[in-house]
Each structure stands twice: as structure tokens, then as C-alpha cells.
Length: 544
Image (cartoon, rainbow, N blue to C red; front, top):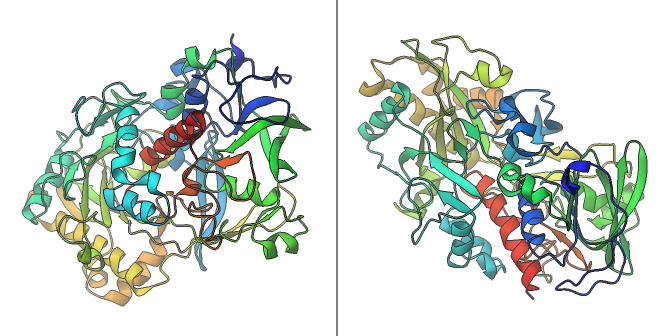
């Protein structure tokens, strides 16, 4: 068994050469979190044999497909949709002041890419260029495109100007031969929406299959893709599970290690550099526990201020989402490969200023598996209702998270701030009404009995529909922007630079969706992998 399999914390290793100066003992780099971006960092940084890398994660570290087991990798299910799934941890949040919710995040090698739906759609060009214009030029679309190509093996399109064929993440688009998917396609055409066969090519939004890292029924998460057993066994890489980070140690303005808890015992892991990849809800908490965050919040709970960073937790964003179920007339067989059907992206009336080729700020995503099966993981009733997932995807940094105690066990106060504006409510109303119109169109007349809710009397009245939306509101779990990137001279809006370096603290970086200034117009799974690639490259090349 190699270092990645032992599950024991190693002693400090002899100092090895790195691309940046190191002034303390321990490993060259300690990565906190073996999730989506953390797996990428571990793999890429350990490609340099002279750099020692230690990765710690609160969850288990399976080895290969056998270690994960078929149930966790079954692409027809979404483990994160199951309440209390052992591969997740739950965060109590408020979507609105009167709408409490539990947000699950992955707690296993690969993080949320292990428990999500396998959706692997790139952010839009407009997202990248918006982030670049906010003081992050390395994130311009033309500059990240080579990395997007390098991280994937596109099984549909192969190598070309837009796609790669040698990357760790295997990508294939969902099949549209299921009767429900075929009806969705025809209904979208009947309503005038264009075809969108490759949602990763930046063409005009419309209807098409979903790019996915689910291949032949198996969800190939980032851990499985970037950290197979042969990578875990590299002599300069150690990945340890069951090890919870509590705070970063900062001395004289430099991160020198991480305090971790394992088996009830605390220990300091010395490091030449620390990278936080614990996810968009845990990473900002770790920063605040380490004295890096809004001064008033830290002083209120008695945490000594290391760096006044008002942008930490002050304006994150996510995608509000609704589930609309409809009743099929026939008892269709379960799809053989994936729960994903087709997907329609369209532009709301509020997003019309972007023009016909804009990013599309509404998403209607089709499930070919009943919600009851996704939630329970058990057998679904044949002919049971099938869901559409309707999300408003315009970047809206309405969220706020605040530390409540210096005790790491005390959860954050997390408010998503959904439905706070007329525009938010209007977008979701339009998404619901388009979904209803699709189901009422001739292509669905044969296969569908109709929408199970809301009814016509609610659909036709804005106030009634707003109430229905609030009562059924959920979230797509696409949290971004809790530790946003941007220039150091804008501390109200930026806590890290474009390569994840924490402003004002040497030797400390963040590498997960925390750093995105706002949520992209598509789910961020593919962008999370890109974050790992981009920041690993910056570390390896010592980019200024």
C-alpha cells in the first residue's frame, strides 16, 4: 500500500526544492481538502518529484473504483440528493428569511464531484471575461481555453480548437433516445428554441444534451480521475482522510502550517505553503477561524485579527432552483447510463440585453429518474413522476455568511438572500411558465399527462406564482464567491488574487469555487476542475 492508502499522518520530510522560497519545516505544500479542485492540485503539484505534497481531508480516501464502490459511482443516482448520505456533510442555511434549507456537500475524495449529478458544463465566455475585467486577466476566456482543453478527454468531439482528448476528465454528452428526452427536444423546437448540440462550445444557448463526466453508467469524479491508485502511490504525495482542519497557523504574516484534528487529537502540520480547497462554505470558515475575515465579525467572537478581509463571506452567489414534476403516460424502463436527459438554456426578459447570442440565464434540466429514487436511492416506481429542475442562473451575489463563534464546531450563519428583488422573482416565474408551455406543447401530448403543479390558476397570476415559488424553493448548490478574487486595493470585494493568493498573508492560497467573484451562468463543476488546474500551474511556474 502506498502513502495515499496508509491513512496515517507522516512525519515532516526533508526539505525539497520548490519554485518558491520556503522558510519552515514540514511538507512543501499542505492542501486542505481532497475535493474537486483539491484532487487536481494534489495530482498536478506532485507531478514535480522534488515537491512534497500532503493533502488532508475530513472524509475517507477511497482507492480506485473498487474503493468507491458501485453505489457511490452509479450515474443514474445523485448521492448528494439523499438526506444524510454518509459521503456528504450538511450545512444549515436560509434561502430566504423564512425558508430554511440543508445544503449537502461532498465529504469524500473528489468532494462534491463524487456526489453530484455528473453535470460538466463549462462557464460561459461572458463569465470568464467578466471575471477578467474585475482585475483577474488570467481568467479571460482565451487564456483559460488551453487549460479547459487540457483537463478533458471529450469522447464525442475529440481533439480540436475547443476540446481535448488527453485530459483526466472524461466527458460524454447525455443520450437523447429516451422517449422523455426526445419529447423535450421536439417540444423545445416547437417553441422556437434553437438546437445547442455542444454546450461547451460557447454557441448560442438552446436545447441539447448535457456534457457529463458520467461514462457508461459510472460517475468519474475528480478524485477517481486525477488521483487513481498509481498517482496516490507517488512517493512525494500523501493523502490522509479522517483528518479535519481547524485553522491555519500564521506567524509574522506568513502561513506556516495547519492545525488538524484526527481521532480526537490536535496536531500542527508544518508547511512551506498552505492551500485551502475545502469548498465554498468550509474554506471561508477556516479563514475566519484563522483570523482572516471582516474585522468586526472576528472581534465580536474573540478571534485575534490577522488580516482584516471584509470580502470574506460578504457577498456570495448561487442558483435558486425549483423542481417541477410531470406524469408520464407509460411505464418507461430506467435509463441505462445516467439520470440526465436534455437541457434547455434560454434568456429571460431581464437577460435580453445580452442579445440573442448571450449566455442564457435560465436553465431547464431534465431528469429521467423519478425524484423519489434520486432522494432515497431505492427503487423508483415505474411510471412515476419525472422532474424538471428549473434554475435562474444570472450572477447574483446576494448571499452572506458570518462566523458565530471561535469554536470550529459552531456552524456559520449562512443566508442566501434569494428572491430579494423583482428581477429574481420574474426570472423564476418565466422559467416555470416555459416549462409548463413545453409540457403543454404537441410533442408532449402523447407521452405526458401534464404538469403536477402549479396549476393554471397559479401559473396565470404573478402573486400566486410567487407564493408557490417561495414554498417550493430550493438551491442548485452552486455556491461561489465566499472568498472572491480581485486586486489587493479593493478589499471590500477581493480577498485573494487571480491565482488564489490571500491578500496580506504570504504562503496561503485558496483553490476552490470560493474564489470566483460570482457564480457562472452554468453549474460550476467543470470550473472547479479548472480552478485546480490554473492554480496548480501558477504554483508550479511561480507566476507573479
